[in-house]
Image 1 (spheres, rainbow, N blue to C red):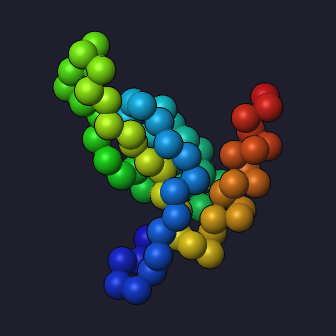
Image 2 (cartoon, rainbow, N blue to C red):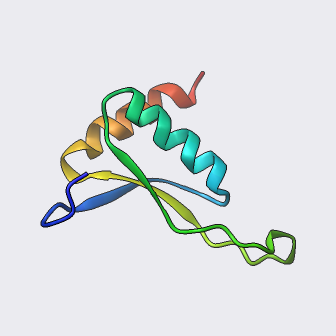
Length: 74
């Protein structure tokens, strides 16, 4: 992923980092660079859960959304 002037877009949001990492890995395996942003809480049982986002380069957004929609029905 480029960081200088590249813009990122979130393609998925999760309450736990593991699901976000699995999704980002699947995108990467299909040729779409993806990163995981944010952190889950150390205290999820207390309701302190921050969202964890999977983001891709802006130009890869449509392809990523398409791939995620195709794989979510499996």
